[in-house]
Image (cartoon, rainbow, N blue to C red; front, side):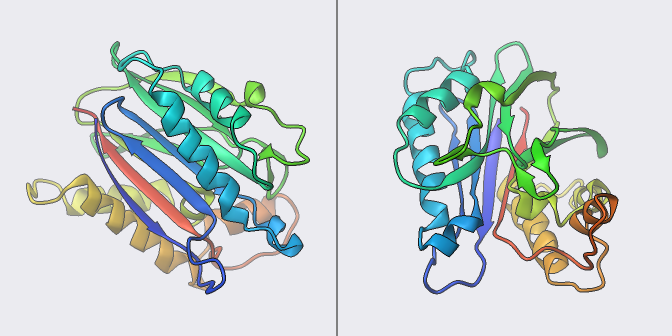
Length: 243
């Protein structure tokens, strides 16, 4: 599994690292994304610090796992137990197993999409208590790693996995990603990192477009809220190609 990433934070001079965090562990064929819950900023707490510590502890927990048989639920549980700063975060951890499947655990509204032969195959489900209030791990939250959605999905060589925080998933549709994949088809110079940047840039443009009918706006309307345009947010995009 070859992976490359893109991250751009919201314009906030006081919190230049933003609220998202991620890791890519090529040795264990595992990826993680976390999105710190922004509401903590109102209490003067860096909303990204919990996400950063959770992902750092996930990378540490990975060292106890074997390549090809990583248990992402166990990794998330150990990381959660070792994360002590105030705050809360969503989390998604994905690993490639030796039996040609993606084994993932997802809590909240980060997640991933799977593409095969430029077709949209799968999207991880969102967990939320109500619209725009995702499940989250951390301070004052009753949500625990054991309630995260966990599944195994079969994959094939050449499959593309796009992993992201809600800043990505709220601002781009699968058909837009397919267009990007089609534009780079046959270009041997295009790396997974190039794809991550192209997808991330598209989501960034959409997030500040007041006329774009974003996935976030669609979901808001379905929930009875009025929202137009994209959703301005930190954006993490990781692209993996199954080898």
